[in-house]
Amino acid sequence: MARKKIEEERRRGAPAYMTTYGDMMTLLLTFFVLLLSFSSLRDAKFRRAMGSLKGALGVLPFEQSVIRPERVPIPQLTNLQESEIEESIAKLEDMLSDQQLREAVRLQISDRGMTITIDDPVMFESGNAGLRPKAYPILTRVASLARGWPNTIRIEGHTDSDPIRTEKFPSNWELSTARALSILHFFQDDAGFNPRNLVAIGRGEFDPVAFNDTPENKAKNRRIEINIEYNPEVKPPTGVLGQLR
Image 1 (cartoon, one colour):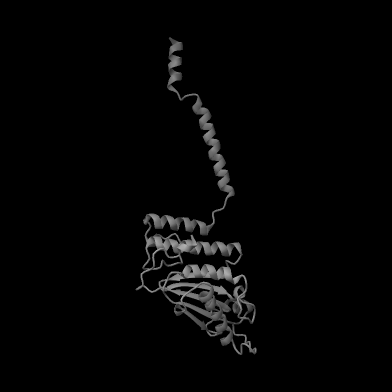
Image 2: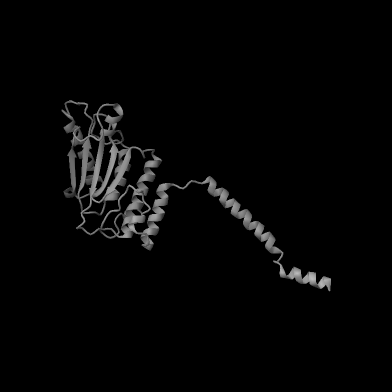
């Protein structure tokens, strides 16, 4: 009778293989946790994935945007179109990270559009208006952000307060304008933009972002600003920025 009771108790427990199976699952979980601890999640790729999810499901309101808090969502966009812009920005940031240029290129979004600020040494040699070779990949990505929008792209050249006075550039007006025109010609000739939507402006040293009192501040003032303006009355084209996929 006692033996029969013991056998019944054994039958009530888990099958024998469950112990081995449980040990295996525990080891697998530990293994994947270890892999995760050695991995790194890139911020840009995370925003890209979340932006795609946001566009596909359409469940996250603008106040809960997964892009950086300082970025203001662009009006008049569907969730899918906004996610495409987020993906394009993420690809631009990936490229800048690979070339160690994250600090040299800054992007700001407002309700008026998008502004990309690029430090002067990335684009041009000192006292020169010809584009440097490493400027082309950056401008190609920037052009991809603007492609498909029938709105104005305003390119502004800025310098510090140090006078130049060369035969080719009598003042900073000429130098800043020539640099803005070099980028304008890239958008027109290389990227195929409609010249009617392009504006080049030379601001010289007269629109600084810092006092021209130290070499560091002067470096901040030597910059290119590319302003992609959005017209709220123009409906965004379908599949905008799709060529980046």
